[in-house]
Image 1 (spheres, rainbow, N blue to C red):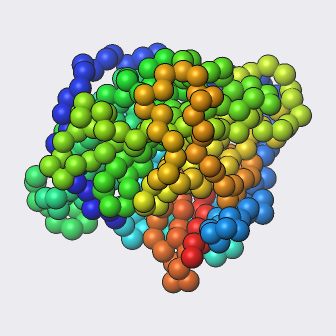
Image 2 (image 1 turned 90 degrees about the vertical axis):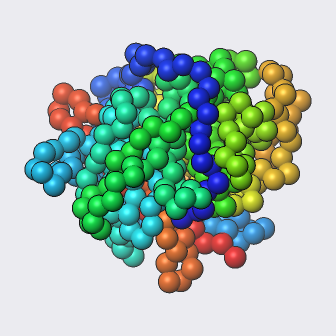
Length: 393
C-alpha cells in the first residue's frame, strides 16, 4: 500500500444537493436481453475470453483471469443486511482485502478476493460502513498518511470533487470491524472538468505508489473540448494529476500545480447495431503504476451485439504535453501515447479496476468490478468481479 503525504484537505466550494442524474443505461429491452445472454455466458465460463495484447517494447502485458458473480448483499455482524449493486470503484487494502464503492449507495463495501489459477476468483462480501451521505460515488483510492492512519479518497460526479475521509481515532480489537470514517475535506474539480456532459464527468481515481499524486479523469469529452463520442468518432478527455506536497497543501494550490494531459478514448466498439439507445466510450478507471505510468480502463457500451467492450491501455504521462492552460481546440495538444494491453467483452460493464498483491511468480494481480445496474423487472442483477494479471519486466 502506498505511503501518502496528503494530510488535510482544504475545503474548496460549497456542497451541492444531490443531483437527479439521468439513467446510465436507457437501452431497449432487446439490448438488455443481449447483455443478460452475454453476461451469463462469460461468467459461467469463469474465464475472460479474449487473447491479451502485448506491449512488445516494454514486455508489459495483461492476461485475463477468472470472473465470478458475487453475492447480492452483505450481511453485517449484527445480522442486518445491505444490498450490493452498481459496483463502480475498488481499492486494495493489503493482503486479500479490498474496498468498493457503489454509485447507487452511501455505503463503503469491504470484501476479500482470492484469485484462482484458470478458475473464477473466490469473492466474499465481509461488511460495510456508511459514508457521510448518498452521492454519485464513482471510485475510491487509499494510502497511508504520515500519522500511520489510512487516508481515503473518493471521487464523485455531483459536485464534482475528490473527497477525503480519515479513519476514526477509537481503538478496537483486530477483527472487530472497520474503523469509522470521518469527512476530512474536499478538492473541487469544477475547474478542470467544467462543461462536463451529464453523467460523463470524473469517473476514475488512483493514487501514485509513492503518495505524491492523485490521478482522475473525466469519462467522456467536455463540451468545451469537442464533440461527444460517436460511431467512428474518438473522444479526448483530460487526465488530471493533483500534486500532494509533504506539508499536505491541497485545495486551490493543488489545482494550480496539477498535471493535465490529453488522453484520446477509442470510438464505440464495432457491433451489429440494434438501433436506439445512447453510446458510451470513455475512461472509467485508472491504476497508477508509479512515475507517471497509468493503466487506463476504457468502457464502451451501445445497443448492439456485442453490447459492451472493455479495454486496458498503458500510458506514460511523464513526458506528455501539458494541457492545463489549453481551453478548447485540443487539436493543438498531442494526446499521450497509449498501448493496448487487453480488450474483451466479458458480457459485463466494467467500471472499477485496482492493483492488488503480487503473485509468487512476480505477476501483479488486478481486480475489476462491474456496474450492471441495480435491477430490472426480472430481479436484481449480479455483481461480477474479475481478475487480471499484469506482467512487467
